[in-house]
Amino acid sequence: MKEKATDSYSHILKYTGIFGGVQGISILVGIVRTKLVAVLLGTEGVGLASLFNSTIKLVGDSTNLGLSVSAVREISDAYEKNDDERLSHSIKLIRSWSLLTALLGMLVCLAASPLLNKWTFTWGDHTLHFVLLSPVVTLLAITGGEMAVLKGTRKLRSLAKISVYNVVASLLVTVPLYYFWREAAIVPVLFLVAFVQMLLTIGYSYRFYPLHVSFSKLLLREGLGMVWLGVAFVLAGIMGSGADLVIRAFLNTADSLDAVGLYSAGYVMTMTYAGMVFSAMDTEFFPRLSGVQELGPRLNETVNSQIEVCMLLVSPMLVLFQMLLPILLPALYTGKFMPALGMMQVMVIAMFIRAVKLPISYLPLARGDSRSYLLMEGCYDIVVVVLVIVGFRWYGLTGAGIGITLASVFDFIMLFFYMRWRYRYAMSATVVKYIALQLPIILLSFALTFTFQSLTYWLSELVLTIVSVAISLRILHAKTHIWDKLTDKWNKIWRK
Image (cartoon, rainbow, N blue to C red; front, side, top):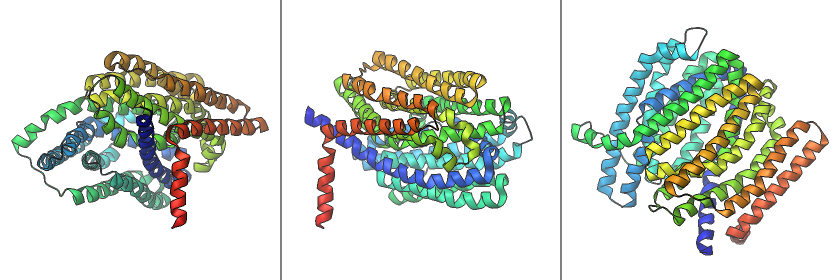
């Protein structure tokens, strides 16, 4: 049993390292892009781009019929059974439906442009902007379908390459246009970035599986089962995108576009940093969890092992991130974004909670239980909107961060009890032990932010970082003998 657990830890570490490394490269390139965009557009320009992005994502999530999730399950089943004929048929089915949803999304965006303008902005007429952005919804729908093909057929190396190329291409497209045309380039940039992403994705996907589509009634009727499975994911996506849009629209009307830009910068920066650890969830953990058919010990062990590794990896990163935030924020953006510092410092706690709850939240997805998934997502979206709005009214952007953190606590408690009732999930004593070791360090690190600009802050945060790293490394070494493996690899390289 111990050997099996060790193998599980090693497996999780391997794929977390691969996709975490890719995410790290993406972050480094993204840092340059973020800095340049912040300088060129300022807080107001970043806020405007954020509003357009949120709105287009809402339209896309509302019209893609959940194919990006349900298609992965459909293709994975055929791929795992080595049924080439069924696999080819499934890919044709998904591509046909993706094209239909792409057309639907564009038409909905065109028709709803006046309403989107009215709901999102209280100043100016941006209807034409939404009309011009309607093709972006089409591009995103096609990209989502091809990404599902690559995920379902386990083309992990190609997915990693696409991720890196997308960030580099985004940098090369974004900066020159913003440099010459500033805010006037926002709409063209959103279109060109989506277009390049689609070209990269279909380039890899079509290489493995040449394009074949069919719009026969029989084929389209056959895909209805997959579509119905995705309806809950569509609704969850609508609620998630809608919640995000409501929050940003509230900030725009209650305060200003600057507040939207500050909130967007703080949220994206914090989520992206922790995303280095979470990036392997969709591509590796989700299919592996889906393969566990029975409830009980094996299911619990799969989820708990993922929680343990995520928590041990992300905790030292979060303490270090907390310590360096006063330097990183103005360095990656500009000094004008410093009002978002308090919000980000509070959200570090939310990221730790996310490391614990995220593997649990995949249980309904893996079981194909769309109703439970929709229920959990809906409850969280309502709570986070209410708490962020209340928090912002009381304490500004820092209050918004408090609202996000409290919503994460609520979500964890809700998931824990619901999954225990629904799937007999039980958190292991080891997970509880690791939480008891790392959570106090995270909380103390946050408490020290009130002593910023003193020698005590820097020395204490450095000590906490070292302690957190030491705890995680000691546990991971005991579980996987990671030092021995790294030493062996180094020796092999040195001998060559």
